Image 1: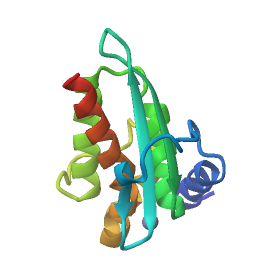
Image 2: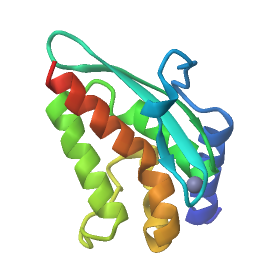
Image 3: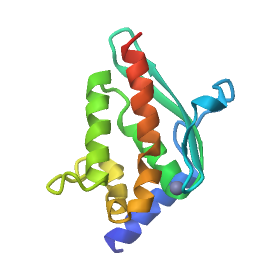
Length: 145
Ligand code: ZN
């Protein structure tokens, strides 16, 4: 099986069975992050404990496979980090997808490596980074509490 097929499988699996997907109907719609070019939308809540560790990332998203899979993969991978570590990951992920870190790779990021190819499709980069923008916002709010 070619790598690209394998990555496609990972993305479709997370799209069809998004991990940590939650009913966030209590979160106002105005707090949703939108990607109007594709119609993607995501609401996200982060739970940080008293030690500043990210205990869980929950989200409610609708949109294309890449936007939903990216939220799902992110919610699994960034749990257990400190807020500062998670913010660093968010920033690195966005730079890699935007092609600003040509030497860097998502190889050590578990299944998130499946999204690396998105960097070649500028229109889809917004799909893949949408949930990460939402997480960045939520982490900054948690930090200032
Ligand atoms: Zn999209």
